[in-house]
Length: 346
Image 1 (spheres, rainbow, N blue to C red):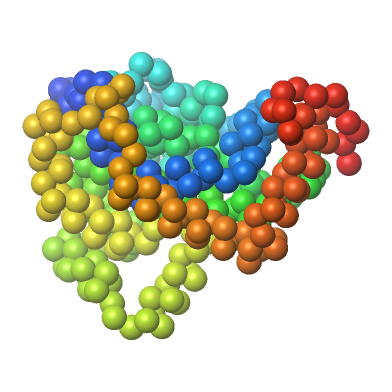
Image 2: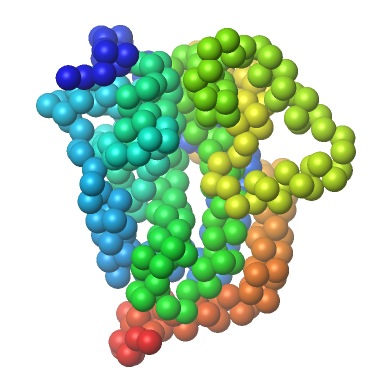
C-alpha cells in the first residue's frame, strides 16, 4: 500500500520549465568547481575509463542488491512524484528509481551512462508528500546538471576506500581525488537546492527539508528561527571557529544545512527565483560564454584543488603520473588518448 503522506501528489499539475538549462539556476560555486575539475590533468579520462572497465556496473550491483525498483505498480505515489519532477525540468530521460532499506532519510543519484536515483526507505516512509517532492526534485536536478558522472566517481572512491573495489583499482590516488570531488560535491548541492525550490514553487519548502536534515522531525521547530540561525552562522566573525568548521566540512559530501539555507535565501532575495519562475531563464543551447568573473572563480577552485593534491600526495604532477600509470596498466595509451596495447595489471 502506498504511503498515505504521498497520496494525491500526482493529481497536481506540475510546473514546467521548457528546455531549461542547468545554467539558469546553477550556483556560481558549482559552475566554477566543475570547470576547475575539468582542468585537472587526466581526471575526466579516469572517470570515463572507470565506466569503460565496468566499475559502474559493480557499483550498481553493490548498491542495488537489496533495493526495490519503483514504477506504476511499485510505490506508485512516489513514482508519480518523480515523473512530475521530470516533466518540470523537461527531461526526456527517465532514470530508474529505487528504494533501499536504510533508516536514515537520504537519497543519491549515480550513473554516468544511465542515471539511477536511490531513496532510503527511511525517507519514503517518514517524509510528507511535499518533502518527498523536494528531495526528488533535488535529485532530478543532479541529472539535468550532469552531476552524475562525478557523483558516480565519488561513490566508486568511497567503495574503494572501504575495500569493496580495492583489488580492481590499484594505483589510483584515492585520497587526493576524494578531497577534490568532495569539494565539488558541496558546490553542486547548492545548485540542486535552487532547482528544487523552482520545482515545488516554494523556496521555504526546501528550507524546511534542510531544517529537518539538521534537527530531525521534532515538533515545535520554527523555520523563521532556523533561517535567523543560518544568518548568524554565515556572519560568524571568529576566525578560529570558521577554520574549525571548514575542517569538519572538508570530508562531507554536503554543505551544512544552515549554510545551504543561507545560500538559498540569498539567491531568492536577489530576484533570480522570481525571474526564472516567471519564464525568463536560459534555455538549452543558449548558454552564455564564460565571463571574467566566472573565470576568476574557476582559477580560485583550481588553486584549491592543487593545494588538496599537494597536501595529500605531493602535488598535481605526482597524481597525474599515478593516474597515467593506472590508465596504462589497463590498456589505454595515455599520451595519445586512444586505445593502446593492454599491459598486465598488478
